Every structure is written in structure tokens, then in C-alpha cells.
Length: 121
Image (cartoon, rainbow, N blue to C red):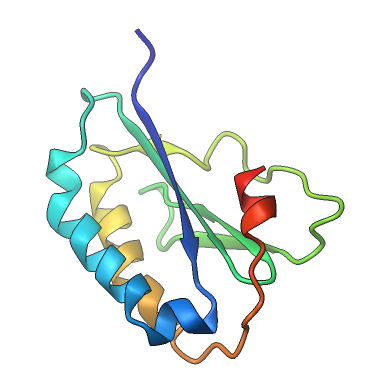
């Protein structure tokens, strides 16, 4: 069977940040990373969205996660197709670091728009 794959779409708009949703989600996922189903091949990835889509490369080979922002939702192409999903076990430290930093990354946002439809596509 193919490896389990988990792609999380996270709202990082002002409302998501102000309500505490983003911080609560990140904290809860960190606490439960070891409980995610799948074997040693399980893959995980993250896309955040407000009025734009943000894709992340979480490979441990990088000194820090790499974010790519796509504001043009009409001409959307998938960046980094080979590194959007990373092995959960092999990149666990990068994933934890990313989740710990994510609420602060968008803490001062004033963006209220949501590109959820594009993120789902």
C-alpha cells in the first residue's frame, strides 16, 4: 500500500489568528504528532492561506522551512511538487519548529480575505 499522506490547510487570516485557532491547532498537532496513523513512510505537508496561498518546504536538509507565497490565484501552479510533502518521522524536528513558529509568523496580519476555495483545489 502507498504511504499515508496528510496535507493540512490552515487559515492564517486575521480572524483565525485573533480567535486563537491557529495557535491552538499548532499546539494540539505538536502534542499529537506521534499519534498520526501511518508507518515510517507517512508524509505530511502544510498550506496556509489568507488572500494568498503559502506553500512550505519542511525538509530537514534546510536550515529553516522555506515559504513560497502565491498571490495570483488565477494562475496557480503547485510549487515544489517534490518537497511539499515530507516524511513525518525523518523531518519531525523541522515540522515541530515550523508549527511553533507559525502563529508568530502571522501574529500581526491584517489580512481578512480567505482563499479557502483555491487552497482546496
